Length: 514
Image 1: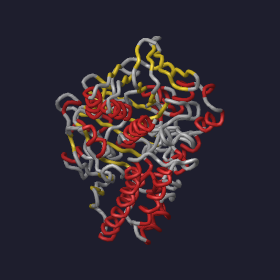
Image 2: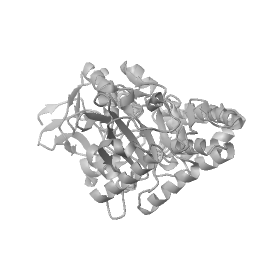
Image 3: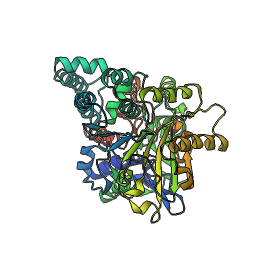
Image 4: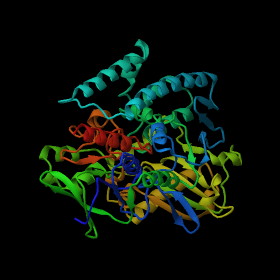
């Protein structure tokens, strides 16, 4: 071993940076090893064409937890704040959603949406409380675990009889039925459907899509912000916090394996042969990569390995980047509207039909899209007078029938551009460069198994007490000194920092108890 540290964090994604900053703040000598040449994981800004840069994977900030901001004293500059969601209509009769306000729908839908938003944000606030706490252990729990469970039961009861009943009724339901029951506007239902399924292998009719919608609101009630300079400004701020507290961050150093000695973590070895020792190793990699690749199944019990192997984490969303020689024309939009978020999801049935091919390993020829023009508010991302389009495109299954090739990638990108052209007819003529990242590309570039942003589906059987799997829900792996701190752990994905913060708190509390 060449150097010894109090803790080694594998991966400088945002959760790894949060965890390392808090461990260092507590006085630990922390080393962070990142495979790429820049920190941030999937939350980075990079060039995709000469003069054009984009947030490569995550591109909007809506879940960063206030407690993370406070603990680390984060100061983030925004290019756009509290962005409006514009549900696009080919005829220019768009629907606009901001917070509890919706425009372009009937009075009945306006009133119904206010009630819907009030209820959903109240339920999201309850979930957010438990996002920021380690989950209780269900089997062989301590008195503290029992207290956490009792507190959860009490908090649900405090919703009141009617709301408690609604919470328990809705939590496992699909979003489709709730939207059809409440609203008339197809565009409103389509936009809310998209919010519930974005980044998942789920359609609006799938169970648990109320849960995924609530999860989306668990930051600042779904308020959308765009950081100046793209997502790297957020992760660079986290890296500065880690360094300021004394952590050492080394990039371009992929970890080959986590060293196990006598049944416990003892350090790491990098791909270039360097070794670093520590009795505490924290993995920001996804659970499958951590156990199957870095640890090796031979070092853990067979049943645990099987549970990790069975985690559902096949990505179903692609990322499209277009370099444009100017803004396209979209009927019914003013120029200022290009600074907002746009969605293409004509109605809830369209979103469900878009999902159908993915069930059988095929991509959607009529995809749903979340579209932004980040360069409109942030001139650093494109040459003067030119622009960047950044879009999430669903559905693009990780396990595409026949595999992802250059031909199938181009075919899916063409389907997305054709769909965009239905709303912006001059868009294709304005494209000077393009990039499409399929889930397979996301897996390769960001080292996320299956290319799934959340490191595993957000469903009730992979949530709270059983995330990532039973027996590992409190960040500690079944090897002494080994922990998870990434999106595969509780509470899940999104640029929230909650998993990293919770993991650091668990590690520090266990060490104090020892």
